[in-house]
Image (cartoon, rainbow, N blue to C red; front, side, top):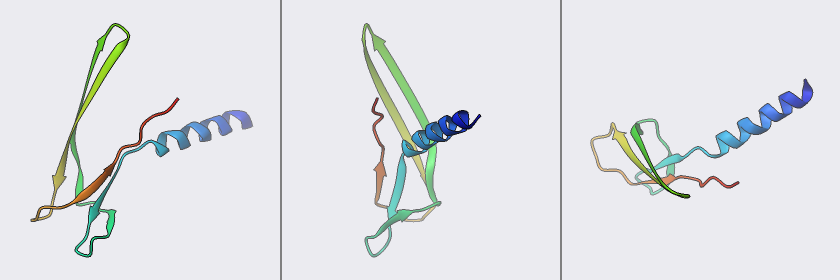
Length: 80
């Protein structure tokens, strides 16, 4: 039972470590997470030809502010 809990904890840590993060710049140029800017739509297109695959991700973000914002999207790559 203990080994199952450890395995579950380990895999849940790996999954959470791979989540993209979006940070928005404030008026002083400092970046932080903001709930008023969020991912509204995500489209993932995968094309496979033989042993080569091409993955295209289209992300549309919703901005609830009345101004143009600058941000950083960190999208970690999956290693195995």
